[in-house]
Length: 190
Picture (tube, rainbow, N blue to C red):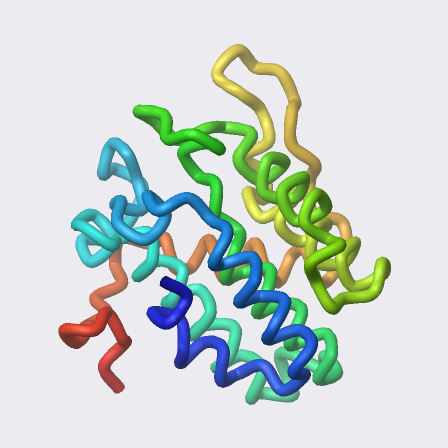
């Protein structure tokens, strides 16, 4: 099912990182590829509120990153960092409704996804440092929304430029003012 992300995979230059992302995408629950981005519909734009909305939200977040990478005044990441950031953004919501689909978003889904990546690290072609980089970015993608419904701080806050960048791409992709058009294959129209 990873083929839905072929365009996003083409942004990754390092074959090891690309192969590792394909491995993780193939291990995600099937629901990831079909559910809306928001279980309630109130936190994402219209394009993300329908079937495959989570995939569309993810694609837009990756596209935002890709566009920003092309502006040196905004980003001065090296190619390895760019590849790992695309990996992190592509899987950031991979377990959004839990390991086994729940009715609503699992608040701790960034931690669940990070654990999932680490549990599968022996199947990946990434170094230990690269896995840690991706996991740190995934764990902090929620930005300032780190407290659960009971007010307990359960998610880490972004601390470095990579974590803040991943959060920014996710945040911008969730803004209701966006009106991104997709073709029949759920690819962004240019």
